[in-house]
Length: 225
Image 1 (cartoon, rainbow, N blue to C red):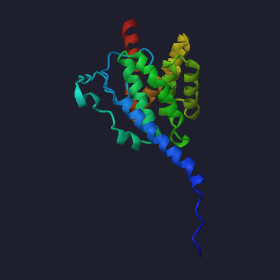
Image 2: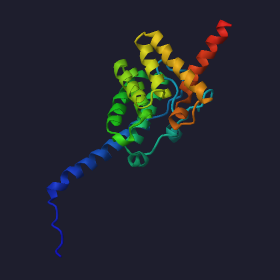
Image 3: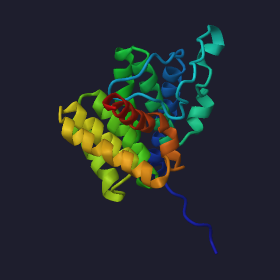
Image 4: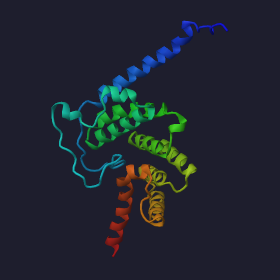
């Protein structure tokens, strides 16, 4: 049998250009993400709590030199991440900038993070990524789009804690206190029925936010006693 016909070079051009664009994007993101570190300051009004943060834990003190980028990926590591990994890292950067009070830089990264989530394949899109997108939309004042993300989460799992939490925050943003509290009541009921916060990765990543709802309820109970 003869050798299979070789594809013309023009047929390979789109793949080459796509590869180069991906490398360039990864390098650009790495440079931006590694520009210093931001110390957590207090709680955010509309977001609050980074993935994996331990409530009450002291934030590491910033230091100069190479240590300032500690915890941030190198260009090589970021280039090796898939679209979801890049999107999640950008989300975390937005949250740190916003919680640190640098709203201008946070706004700069929000658009990049949303574009990165748009590039995530459908099979890698889950409740956690939708929750991230919803929080980003709230930071942009787009409560309707945040509510759409909450609806997508709850359509797949009606009592998902992140979907309820996002729906509550969207309602808060819109000034609908009754609806927001109704969603928070469902969070409390779900946690109580489960005997605690379920040990799901997305719940543990945002445990601080869920516990904030539970603690608020405890505080109201004590105040009314």
